[in-house]
Length: 149
Image (tube, rainbow, N blue to C red):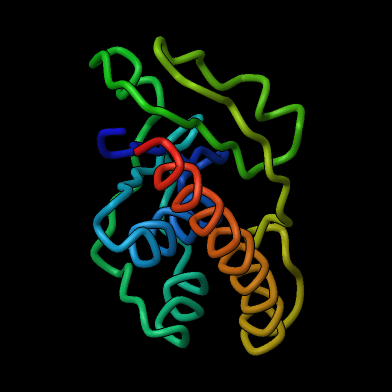
């Protein structure tokens, strides 16, 4: 099997999809690549940037992207993974040639309330949930690609 390409999508590409992309690219170790986009490009969430820095990953220079620009450009992905709530996930375009569309619902860091410290701590929990989901999935994909050889 050739390199797997994955697209992570959330509402504004400001938090969850950015974290998923970063972790997937890290743990995919060059065997798999990911991009991320939003249903509407927003502004990168600074608390998410700080939470990812705590995990040793710098996403501060990332830009938010619009999923429909990727669609119009004819990009192709093996997997498209929505990481927002179900109703927003249904707004995602169908990319031709996609092996599977997956939906993983994670809390939205932009909806968190409280002080900076409280939001950072709660974002860290979401970050770790995403990280663990990515690690498990990457391990599954490694087994699948090894079996396909």
